[in-house]
Image (cartoon, rainbow, N blue to C red; front, side):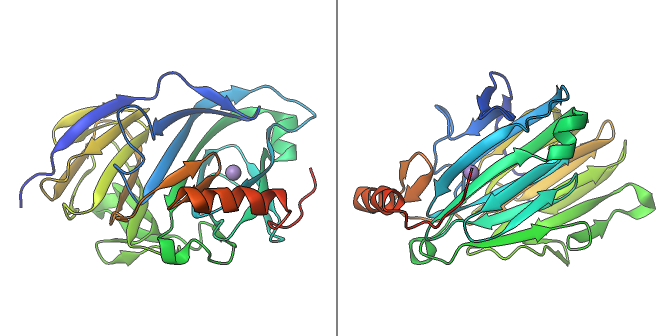
Length: 290
Ligand code: MN
């Protein structure tokens, strides 16, 4: 099989604040990576490691709506608290993942967990937005919390690390997340010198974010904070960890439909966006207090 070609390596420079708790670099959508390029993944906000000083008032983003897609939050360091109008709430610790289906409409708020805010410390988080196909944009809101016990694990031989499968499949190991379209999401946690090779069908839109460490990916060196965007040419992906490394890998079948976006709403048409906003203003997403 041919090596999967790398299109670009992108740096996580120029972060901006989302609320007062998330200092993120938006890898996509951007001027160079359109909202369709990595479909079904619409957006990637990367909060590179940053030390937050202790504070009584917890930082974060207050009540806001979403409709038509899913948000996936992956915590590497720090703790995130979540509350939504479907009645779900929870705290995510390092290594845990929240997969929230906004579907027909939800209100939620996302904060640093209170105790973490009081103590202060290193905060390191990724949030992805995952599109829903037209037929499922009206899905009932849902909340999947994926903990260490739930994830799928593929262990490299000789204790050289593991692959934690969140969604989809790696070799014969499946991830626990329910998804509406076919996708794979996983963390490679590799020891220094580990080597691993696998196939990613060239139809799947594919990217890898270096969370920590340094690795060769198909012969190209990549450092923490780099996003590797693969072309849809070739199948084989070879990773060699130069240092002990964590790499977030995502691939998925594109959803080949029109996309209409307005802030926190992602629909297929302008009319659906207008309705999303109208329903929000009419209080149809439920109730959630600040
Ligand atoms: Mn949100």
